[in-house]
Image 1 (tube, one colour):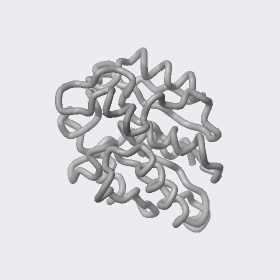
Image 2 (tube, rainbow, N blue to C red; image 1 turned 135 degrees about the horizontal axis):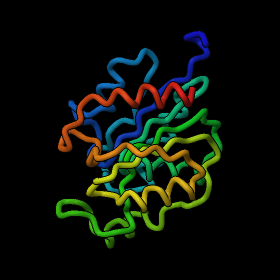
Image 3 (cartoon, rainbow, N blue to C red; image 1 turned 180 degrees about the horizontal axis):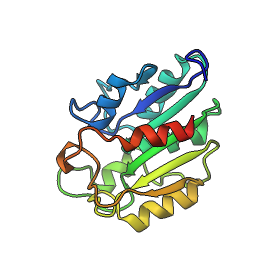
Image 4 (cartoon, helix red, strand yellow; image 1 turned 90 degrees about the horizontal axis):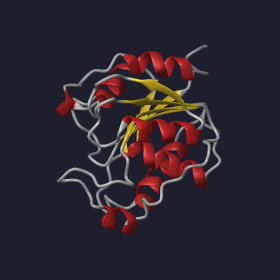
Length: 186
């Protein structure tokens, strides 16, 4: 695969947007052909605004795309896939946030998530190949719930072990396994 035909990796961050030491930020800095959904200045909790931002980022890319989503970015991706038909080569869906159950303190409540358009989240099979990486001790999604999402979306489930929410708070900056999983989708 030449650089011209190699897919662009489009990073879809979660609700906390871009975090300097996050594996997605580090991944984007080291891969040659990447883009990212930009942070929102307004309507930060609006699912529709997040989906529109993803759609705008996709529209700016010529050629094939591999989405790399984390946390609520996974939910943004599945909401986007339900309403848009731009071909996507594949998606890495890492530690999705289970927005249908009460989240820990400091995260949006179920009422707020429903009001902002996140619930219910889509359960239809995705129209592109996907790999869902699930953690055994993620405070934002139980492993069995994440496995159910993978089954609903037609994603290949990868058991990541005990990696928390796969973010700096869980001890993850760089996540080398992402490179391997992205290559599988390319």
